[in-house]
Length: 378
Image (cartoon, rainbow, N blue to C red; front, side, top):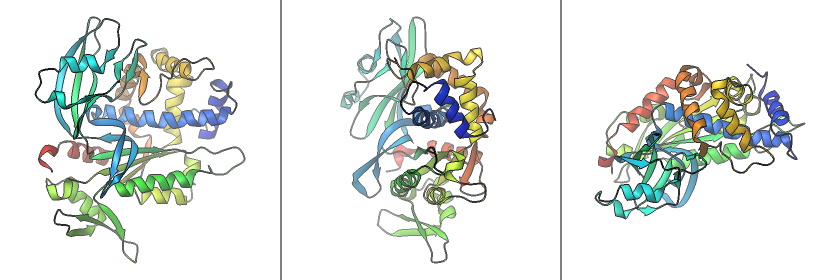
């Protein structure tokens, strides 16, 4: 590992990048949280889930329409897909430009335009760019091909209800403390969202065995051992089981803060019992990403470092290195890096829950859910 601990890495970022701030270690810690989100997002894109992914979409609680929660990423069924061309005239690719290209498509007028740019004049890309919204779906845009004279753009219509959510949780350790003071609060927040998102409810017997409960449309409960019921839901086409089901995935990082070598801390146990899948981004993985792309990159990765550094200088004009907005050239390099190193990157994650499972099994479940005929599951 390039740095012997995340704390050492955070200190390196503090001195090399955030030296101008009042609290340079805290600033570096916030940046580390952004890195966890970016790693998660580009992993999803590399897994072929770009067109299904929304960012910070509001999630309605199961059985309680009055409460919504923004989640980092959600995967949604795709209703329709379109391909258009946009002239590369050096101007912003706005939602208005894209929607004008879709005029004539039946029912396209039902979408209310959103004021987002897919790409602006500063070469700033908006990931999962929402250009329109209707009562039951969204229109999002992304590049198929960036051209010297003509851009090819994908537009895809996503259903409101997702079939998977991903949330990222990281809390740094402050000086003089063994554990971040907000760790348990972040764990509880994540656990609450995970437990309230899906129709699949988690219950325990008096002896601690975990069961799953799901209600059919006649309001009759269906109960089985949790793992057995989860498997049945994911690999079935039963509308009664699938229509309000959402797979919940948590990503946590910072080894020393969440658990010790001897035992999981309370916070990690809370999350592991709440999310369907809980992945731990290892210190080694986070360290490699930051060392290879941000601190000591090869020349072919230099534009990623430039985007990162320009976003965190004393005279910065805009942030061009987040999960939502990112420099276009940095985006393309990140996609190539993840594609070229996918096996290594997948190895950055340890599976905390379910026990004795592998990341390839999560990918299989995501692909299975993506392939469902969601338009028939109502």
